[in-house]
Image (cartoon, rainbow, N blue to C red; front, side, top):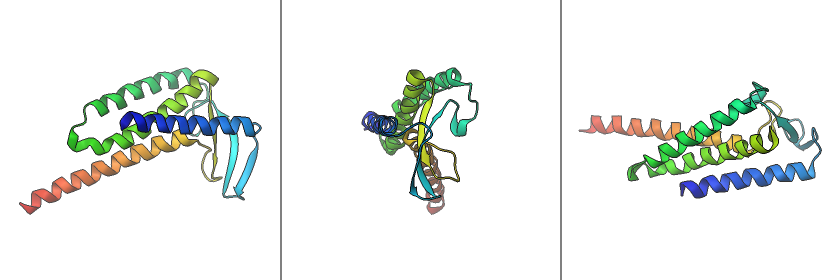
Length: 152
């Protein structure tokens, strides 16, 4: 499931970016809900929120390190921890989507624009969702272990 989820996220990210590139002009913004949510086509040379705009090579290296970490975590999962496959797959797919852009284009295509938040893409979303799920599962797991100690 881990690799299938990662591939699904990667292909969703690539398909939406290809759609944006083929249907929109650079800098074009299409309001979906005026002043709330737009599709805005930009290229991001930096990391999240455009920080470190000259760091493309650095972020390529960080992406490869991230891939190694995520795959290693997946391989160390026990059967009882298999629920971590989904969020780890989300993270891997997101990393691969943005890494592909960095290697092929030298920058990342972003297009989701909520006007109060920097513009982002599906890869960014799935990385954040995956990390949030791991955090939540970890907290719930620890809470459940803690509660089970008191029940004895």
